[in-house]
Image 1 (cartoon, rainbow, N blue to C red):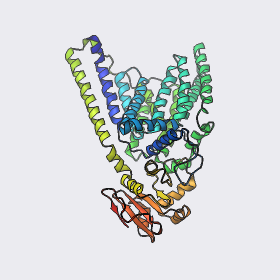
Image 2 (tube, rainbow, N blue to C red):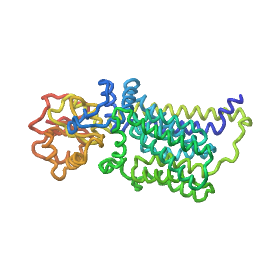
Image 3 (cartoon, one colour):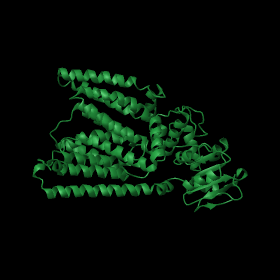
Image 4 (cartoon, rainbow, N blue to C red):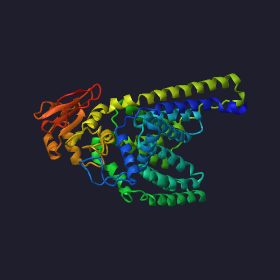
Length: 497
């Protein structure tokens, strides 16, 4: 009975509800445009038993070098999808996100309610980047890495765990560079702190151990299919003006949009809490905070890094509420029953919510991607190169490869500025848009029906609408039409000759 009371104590029920709620928040339909080419890459690696070094999916970059830095994640994604489908991917990635925030909770101080509410703020601020995405694995490993670094001050042996983590991370995602950067910043912060106070022998040993293990972590970076190339790849990605110009996540956050207000709220809350709290911020933590804030202001993609660093600092400055924790021995049987009922109700809610999300996956796919237009092209393959929307490229790789290759897709690091500019000019029907179509001998176009190019080509001589629905349109150059007299048309579509 005592064990049951301890299990159903108020604080533990609070945490159970919190993390069940976070799991429900994270269980969402797959709508990321890149997940499709990740799945196809995983399938490609499984079929060919090697990691591609050149691009197999587009005709504009066919045979050009491609850094498949997420190869292990892509194999992981494809295997889960092959075994348990979308449901497995949605549930597993929701669990990964829940684990990420549980690790964050462990760093937020001893007050369970303050730490729990702070963790909820962190989830609120990072929710826009959630989903079935390789970045989520990097978010989990960043959270674990920070926990190891902080707790290594009491037990230096924990730092040795970063070695196998580096070996794993460097093959999962290029975000491994964040882990190495955090280790370097922790080391630099400790070095700065030595200028303000003398170190004990134990602290000196910790400093030397940290430096040694950081060196070993760096030496493990080339242990991946891309070898030494992964040293420069993360830096090139961060500095890429192309990524910042064409990909929203790599641009600076625009605080006119509500989705970035939680980030601003967290920043202002931390400033306010630091001003009234008597707890001094360590030089090391200040260094981490400033670097991560700069990164978050430069790129939306880096906001989660700032959140993982800032939230524990905020939580530890909000006090300890309540001042005393009720003794679980004083908890009555009726209270235990109520707590158990609450948890059961929450588990039921999460189960029902997750089931509904899984049932909506097909509908979500049709809402975000040209499912029926892709089915049309599967039944009536394009006889000439295809021009496609950037956000739909990954989906078309999944649906049409290898019979049809795409013009462009979400691998922005593969496509240079010139091609991305060509795509933008053509898609927006401006400047010399025809040159791109002529240069690549494009005779088929699959784009949103309300796009500028779709509107322009409808009235341009020599182009006809081959297929159209409420979302997408397929336009074909008349002298290269590939349709049969009685083509296969998906239900709800409007074929045109």
